[in-house]
Length: 258
Image 1 (cartoon, rainbow, N blue to C red):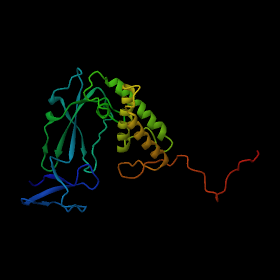
Image 2 (image 1 turned 45 degrees about the vertical axis):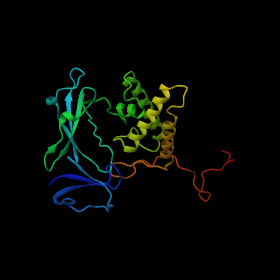
Image 3 (image 1 turned 45 degrees about the horizontal axis):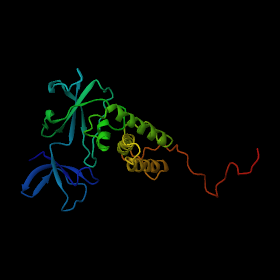
Image 4 (image 1 turned 180 degrees about the horizontal axis):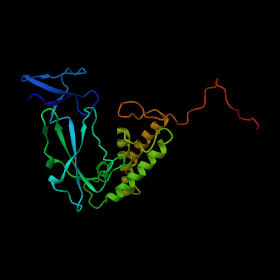
């Protein structure tokens, strides 16, 4: 139908792009409002979505239980990037005193997904690189009711501290906003720490820790870069670099006396 938003290419992968349908030419052909930017293969998927916007709703916490639907109001609207797996929004005035829901929204047709289909989440992750839920699931403890959020938060804070210390000479830390690579790195590192702590005396968590710390080392050495929302590197350029080449003048030589 006209106004339908589609993603051409595999969603959350590079090269996936947004398009808007202007008309259905026949059973196998869609007319688009604007031409596609990239070349796409015949077998690439075309995914129809409700909309490419997200409405973020917020309600005040009263008794620790999810508030009624009619108490939620729209706080913000965020655009979905078809090439990214997740969409982030930071409520600078948020925290545990609020609950959040979100919907998918089409500004052209005003179609919106049902608010009641969204899982209510209490705000407790402001200022962190990843959520407790993401770390819990990555570590395989999604159904571990006896594992408290406090325990997971301890490992999250340990992971964030390790990242900040390791990258503080090359980047401005803490990261605000949180780049995708730091978000993913925090989940991996914290999950590894959580597994290692929960299964002491075993090798559980070692693979995640090894992979996460290898990425940290690559970021330290400049073999991997952290890019901002505009795609450019956010390095401060203040890291300690190698000594100049042999043909460069030195301030002193080994053996010099002062």
